[in-house]
Image 1 (tube, rainbow, N blue to C red):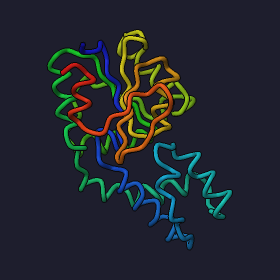
Image 2 (cartoon, rainbow, N blue to C red):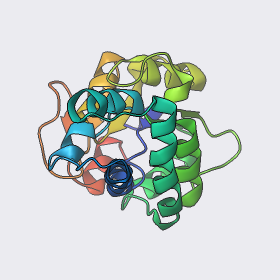
Image 3 (cartoon, rainbow, N blue to C red):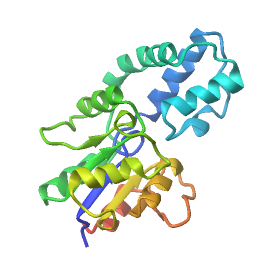
Image 4 (spheres, one colour):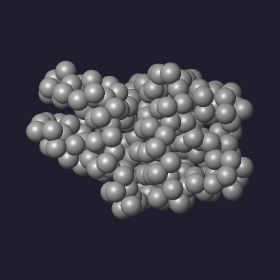
Length: 210
């Protein structure tokens, strides 16, 4: 049965942007003389900019104010955003749900600048579209607030909504919001207890009743 609402993570779920985020992070670190650790990607997947900054500052000696650091990272990221591609199958499912009248929103731990840039690049940007960025909430994922804000914007009970996310951080937030939560990682892995694990767009379609 198709749900009343579906709330999508962006990076790695709708948009294949995680490699770009990693490349921008590595380049920004290199520009200040810091070698990126081998496990950087898995450590920052789904995490908002401030906690990542705190980790880099505390563990690797990043010696820049946050505002200077984030400008440096985005200066590397934004030119690469022109190469962005949708995650195969995801935007097709989004558009099919939209045609059926299902309420939807994009719920991201990225800043508003990145949310808008990414969605424009893959053609998922239209009047009335609902999006929640890290700048729109007091607490980012794994807290429930971003998904709860999406439910409020869509005018639905969280219990009637589905959250779709590719990171443990995001899936934890969906569960905390009381939503049926689908964990769709980029590579097969276990999600948090209570999430529905899938590994393909076809499985996602089935879980959404399409």
